[in-house]
Image 1 (cartoon, rainbow, N blue to C red):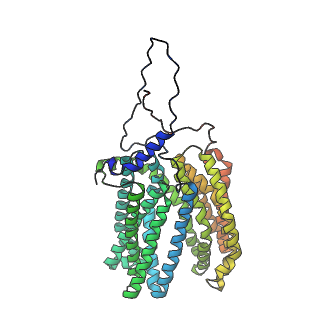
Image 2: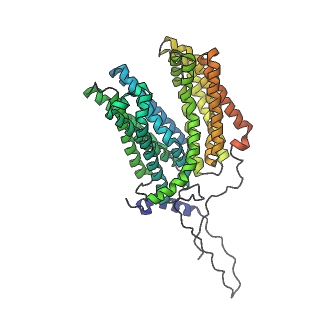
Image 3: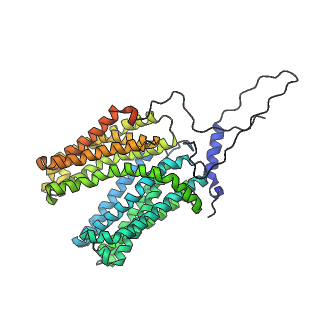
Length: 496
């Protein structure tokens, strides 16, 4: 596909037409004295776009129906719900149709595969949300999107290929990675395809089209479940290899769906010259590292807490903790979804960021209240569905539900810090919360059991919220200006 702006001119032409239509007409001039001549009209200066440079504009098009902050948030939440629903069906079928050992190996391999993918593309993906709105031409947009996709896919492929043997030798449960070439190949390709599909999701979030992310994820989830049914009926003895293969093929088809949706609904992708890609990489690396630190800082405590509980209380007690943690995590889908949508919205429209952030905070807190009350009321019966002993985690569940409210405050603050480019502050805020949660769990669980982990998590989130409230000048956007400031200079044609 040629690397020209003509590949998809309609979207950008329509935007320019709408912008021109909104411009007020020229003011009437006073009549000039007889014999005098009008001064020459000042010609608009057009600055050529430089490939790889960040243009001053942060708003390419007005918010339209389906692209609003609320619509984006709901689509992100729906994506999480769809993945959870299909995931429940997938693993239920796997548990009923395969030996326990095969399910254990398959779940460990797919978890490692997805974790490896996330560790590579979380930062660059978040960087897309910040950078894509400032790309004012199709060619600039394409260079950023394609460069990020190619670089992250190559990095994932390389890291997975290098790590597959050490991972197989280090983790006993993953030993088939060292002796089964088909298993190792599915693992490597699966991680790569999941990175590519994840980058497509970030493109959709950046363009405030999370409805397309919902379609792509539903395609991937449905493909995995369908393939598992086919394997169960045709090759029932395939074992863990079948699980890893369904995830790899699901990632491939999800990536293909993402490319198709991007070309049809967002902007056409195409070939990018290696020189342009190298130049763009220099602009992507530094912010990607900052965004990566923010994302990993938020993700790490959720992965470390089960390990700390296991180390302090044993595997049997951790089973009760982990089940309760998974039930309680349903309440945490709302705040991250709104924060991601706020990040995308703010990257398009910097004006009024404080007002939008405070409104998002109030909306999220209100949206959490009803699910929190419902989950608190039905929490004990839900835990008992997993077995009589699991109801012992009810107090932990209540603590997790309470922590969702202060967690919302820090999530909104981190989103606005991303928009403003203050990545170091966001990294520090997440690091403080994470260290407090992990250290508190280590200190409290020997005496308080799994309830100590809940207290540590609630305390850490409260510390983060109090830091935001105590340091509003450092962690929140400044008060909005009364006069809206435009980030783009409108060039009008010379008066006739």
